[in-house]
Amino acid sequence: MPPEDETPVSVTDNPAEHRFEIRYGDRLAGFTVYQERHDGYAFVHTEIEPDLEGHGLASRLVRVAMDAMAERGTSVLPFCPYVTSWLAKHPDHLGLVPDDQREAFGLPAA
Image (cartoon, rainbow, N blue to C red; front, side, top):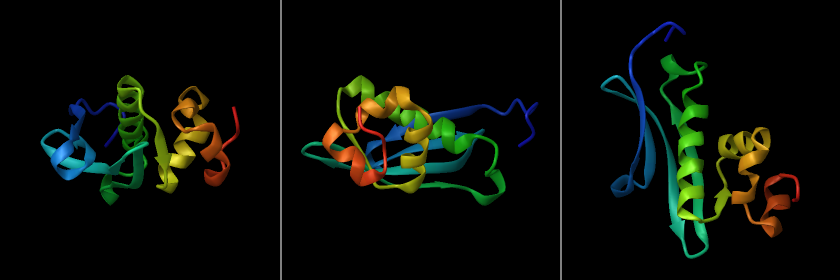
């Protein structure tokens, strides 16, 4: 996917599959899987199609998912290593992870 590519990219929540999905044109390019819990959402796995890796799709996917969690006013437990690393690089979203859970994920305290 070259940077000048104008193929539309969209991210949607697919509650029936318990995941946010990113589409590149009509193609499912990847997803991030969550489990709804009594105390929020646990993100457990993120995957991008190998031939589309390295073009920022995973970051875009997780940003939309985290923005949705913020809009819902819920917390996030980032069991998926990619989601954890994304949160570490985006401190404006760290508030989604409860203070008392951050250390367990290697994230800085508030």
